[in-house]
Amino acid sequence: LQRWLIDDLAGLSALLLAAFLGVVVLILALWVEHDALQHAWRRRTSDVLGGKPVAEPPPTGRLLRRLPDPLEWIARPILRSAAGRQLAADWADAGLGEKASLPIALLLLTGLAGWLIGSRIAGPLFALALALSLPLLPRAWIRARAEAARRRFGEQLPQVLDALAAGVAAGLSFQQAVSYAADELPAPAAEAMRTLARRMALGFP
Image (tube, rainbow, N blue to C red; front, side, top):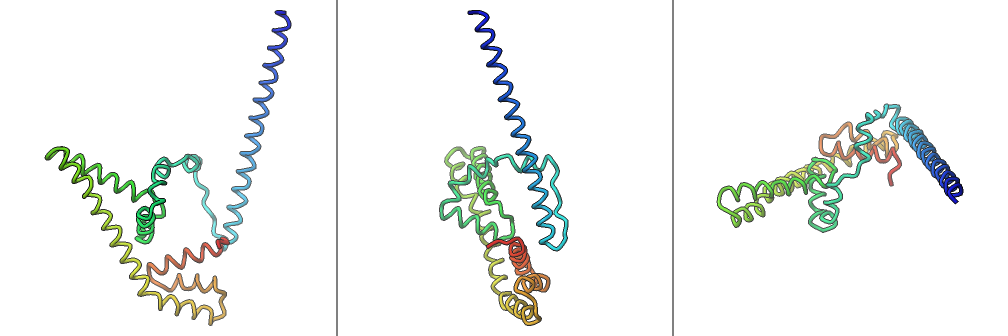
């Protein structure tokens, strides 16, 4: 019985070792395939963008980019609400970035700062009042900046249409006319045209 148990354990350990090695080989094969696809897509993107080289991020940057963002996970329920979507749209239109969790983090930090300042000055009631009212200042700044950018874009809309019409009349395709308009227009219309041209070149719908 003892010999049978030893033989059985030896066979089980060999099976586990083989399974472990198989999993390691599979992970390595998937990693090599993923890396090859990444290089292929980078070359394809460089060709689509007119031969401009696409910089490869360093290994630490790639690792950090693959890690889940806890801030995005926390902000997801807020961004599903109408107020959260409006805040994210104002943040993007204000030219402050596309990461929608950043304005929420800014408001939370401002509220925390208000709580700490209020509790040091006059106690919990004043701290609560400051924590609720102080985030209104960065929110108003974000909204004002977004509205100013939208107003400037609205004022530049006739120039955008003129530049697109001039490019098409000169024999350019619509995508080339968008790139031409991006070079001819001031901000923020120029940045909007560059984004549109880049997305059209990459095949976005």
